[in-house]
Length: 239
Ligand code: SAM
Image 1 (tube, rainbow, N blue to C red):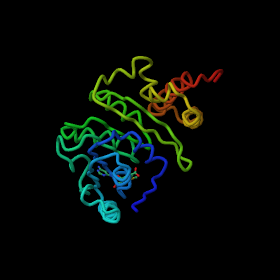
Image 2: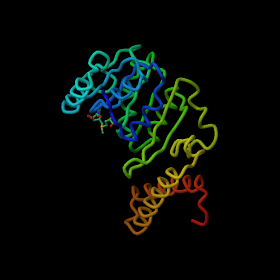
Image 3: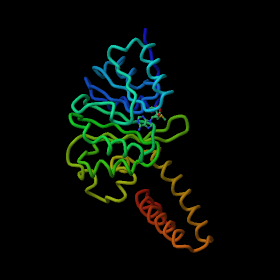
Image 4: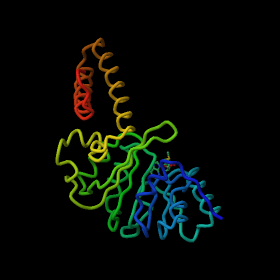
């Protein structure tokens, strides 16, 4: 029997895939996600895209081993260049930085025709992804934050719609923290932002004794602004 155990992180990503999707998993590496999604009956078929030879080969091996070559097409290429417009209905991009995810979406905009759902899991820099979604008329419809093997991950799910809707209140804080995550404020969310606060405050105190160059002052101001946004959201008093 073809059993495949996914990490808690990828399993959470898969939980947002709409039933009967035609999936493109970009930066698929080992292709665990599309294989698992097919075996779970979530998708009809998939494209697994990889730009690097090693991961591309391991995706091909995994798909062959799982006997899914008829339904999962492993393609080598950069970002969304591996798919055509109207070919897939759902795209997953997981395990990369937010800036890379944003640039993959931006560079492949014309390939998003026919896509109904984007499931994006930036390891860092989720704000960049939210900003891209707002600017491109993708409405954030769900978010999840979770801890897996000692690391904290965010998952962003978007559909076509009113991209400003989730940010009606406190836009700057919502872009940074995530409007759904900030509303839910679960323990992982508190942990993530408490750690960030501690880290930023340490940098601010280092900048306070560093040479008062323009760039140091700029950096300090930016961090103080972010500290204020996050403290307001976490309800930190007397800081
Ligand atoms: N998506 C898998 C996951 O979440 O476990 C793999 C994540 S792995 C850290 C990131 C993968 O993305 C690497 O295999 C890398 O080669 C691939 N990648 C990076 N930039 C890419 C791009 N522009 N197009 C396609 N794949 C890319």
